[in-house]
Image (cartoon, rainbow, N blue to C red; front, side):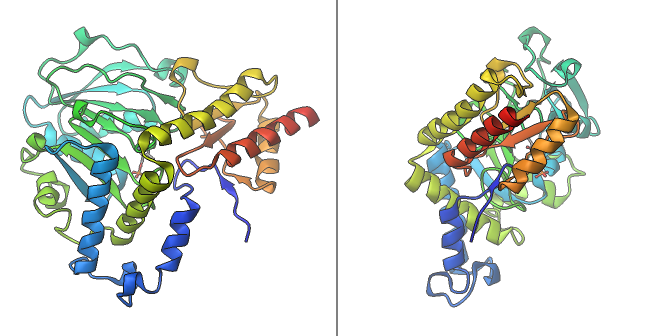
Length: 360
Ligand SMILES: *Cc1c(COP(=O)(O)O)cnc(C)c1O
C-alpha cells in the first residue's frame, strides 16, 4: 500500500491512525456485531458515540457550558441561510466582512432575509489581505456580525477577533476549526463543514450561544431551526451517523496523540513555516498574500507562468503530491495543509519544489 500526500482543500486527509481504527471496527463495532454505519441512531451504542463526540469537542475546544453543540447536515453553505433565518430577527440587520468567496456567499444569502451590510472588503486586491476594521462603521443594532476566519481559497486569516461589542460575532471556521485554540466565549456562533479538519463530508458542526437559540423567523423550515436540533441533542432526525463517529476518532487523535489544540497549533505553525520559509527564499515560487495574515492551513503560491504552474502540478502528482492546483480565481498552486497533513508531507513538497526550481 502506498498513500499519497493529499493537499486537497476539502475533503482532505484524515489521520492514518483514525482510518486504521475505523477499518478495524468496520465489521464489528465494540462487540455489537455491526458496523457503526448500520446502527440505529437511537441505539445505546450510537448514543454513546454522539454524546462522546460532543463531550470530546467541548473538552478539546474548551466550549463554555452556556453554548450548545449541534451536529447538522447541509454543509457550511447551509449555514449561510440558517444563520440569518435564526438570528436576523431583531433589527433585521447584519454586518459582513468580505474576505473571499465564502464570505461573499454568506453575505449574498443573508441579503435574501434582511439588511446585509458590507463593512469592509478586500475584493479590490483579489482578497490577498484582511481589511482594517473601523468599529465606527459597524451597525450598532445589528443582529450579528459575520466573518470568515480562515479564507480557504485565498490563504488569509484573521489574527485578531474583531471587537463587536454586544453584537454577536458569527464565524465560518470551516477550514481552521481545531487547528489552534480559540476563545469560544468571544463568539455567538462558530460553524464548520467537517470535511477539512474534523472528519468526512456530510457533517456540519455548529457551536452556538444558548441565548441566541429560539428566535427564528416563522418561515424557517423545521430542519433549519437551531432550536429543533438543540432540543433533541442533534437527534431530531437521523444525523450523519458515520461522519460523527469519525469526528469522534479525530478528536481522540487530537487529544491523545497530538496532545490538544496548543500542540496542534505548534505542529501546524511548524508545517506552515517550512513552506513559507521556502517561498520567501525561492526565485521561482511566490506566495500571493500579505505576510501578516498568512493562513497556516491553505497556502497559495505561483511561479508567474501558467505553463510552469501546470507542469509543476502534473509532475508533483506523479510523485504522490496530489491536488496542488490552485483555485481558478487565483491560479497557480495551493497547498492545503490541514491538521492531518504530516510534517513529512510538507517537507516532501518543499524538496520537490527545490528540485523543480533547479531543473526549470
Ligand atoms: C469549504 C468551505 C465552505 C463550504 O463548505 P460546504 O460544507 O461545502 O458547504 C464554506 N466556508 C469555508 C470557509 C470553507 O472552507
